[in-house]
Amino acid sequence: MISTFTEQDGFYTFKSWDDLKAICSMDYDEYELVELTPELYNEMLDAGVFEGHEPG
Image (cartoon, rainbow, N blue to C red):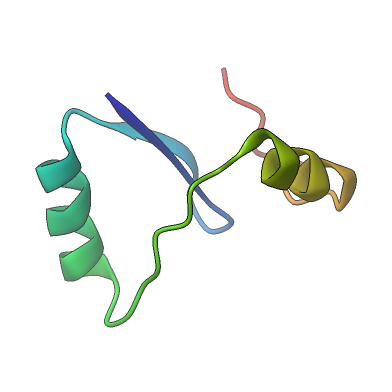
């Protein structure tokens, strides 16, 4: 399983890497996949990026 986060859609899980790339190609003209490291997660959390997108 591949877990993702976008500010537009919040958290989402894909069954495979190929599914993720296929959806990104359909939904976005250009996109960049960035690994959500613990350090980046904490920076984004502190910046309030995840507010309103808490996983259920």
